Image (cartoon, rainbow, N blue to C red):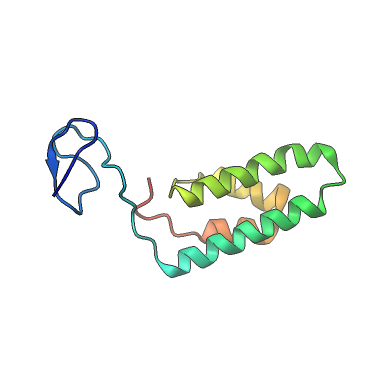
Length: 110
């Protein structure tokens, strides 16, 4: 058994949320399937390629880098990305990365 870092109550080893306080239990990660990892890797690669290819245009690069950083953080911490954001990636940054993000399985993500 382990203990909740917020309230100190004992929680099950496989618990994601503390039953007592409702806070998320630290050091837990929702399992993702291998297809999702492949799709995320594809999206990351094409986002970096599009940043490099458009690097000579300073204005588009000003929004492409933050979008790329947001995708990396969302993939790393299993965060949900909105459909609007994914469509913006598709239109303004990379067609392939946008399609990969739209195909990303987000069931069970935070």
